[in-house]
Each structure stands twice: as C-alpha cells, then as structure tokens.
Image (cartoon, rainbow, N blue to C red):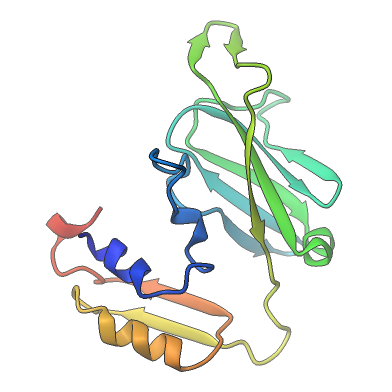
Length: 172
C-alpha cells in the first residue's frame, strides 16, 4: 500500500472524495481540482489523466478554458477563472469532461453525448481566524500526524508539505 493510500485511509471520506474509484476504473483526474484565490476571482485547476474537453459549471454559468478562442484538449492541466462572489454564493461547482478518443488534424473527435461530471462542495476560507493544520517531515510515519490533525477538531486548510515519504522510490 502506498503512502498516500495509507494517508487517505485515515482521513474522513468527504475530504478525499475526488480520489475515489469510478467503478473498477481509476479516476479520470490526476488529483482533485484545486481552487486558488487571486484578487477578486478564483482560478480552478483541473488535472486530467488523458486528453479531454473540460468545462466547469458554477451556479447557472458554465466556464471553459480557451487559447485564442479554441478549447484545449491535449493538455493535462485546465484552468478556469470564476468570479469569487459567484463561487462563494453557489458553494459548489461541477467539472464536466468528455474523453477525447482520437486526435485529428484541424478538428477534435469527441463522442457527442459522452460527457461525464463530478461535483465538488466549496467553502470559502473565513475572513478571520483561519484554522490551518500543517504536516511536514513525516518520513512515511503518517499515522500520528494525521490523528493529531483529526483530533484538533475542524480545520479550514490542511497543508501537506515536504518529506512526507521516506525515500523518492516510494513516491507515486
């Protein structure tokens, strides 16, 4: 069992829901989407394992990444810019993706109705008294730091920072 599998077994399911399996197939995401606060908007990064068309819905609005008006399909990282007020109000966003089975010159080939989605709850950080738990330098000994984090009560942000595994051969 890998380090991260052990880590996620000790954390409540709702925190690591993006890492769950899709039936017998692995998640199409490399990692859960990440939300970054930048000035008056959020940037949501979605990392995919294979070529896909990706878009995001917040409330009633859809957001698509683009390069000069063309939606990218060959990159594994997709970025979406969403107004902060909209995501704060909605409290949830949905990632829609369509696998891209064939790449052709000058066009993309996507099965028309084969779009999948995954929704994520979102909670903005409080304006004051942010509760942060920071785990670093565990060197593959994660049980006690994770127990400490969970026993400290609810926290707003968990930082997993450096030297979590003992050697680079163990990293996945």
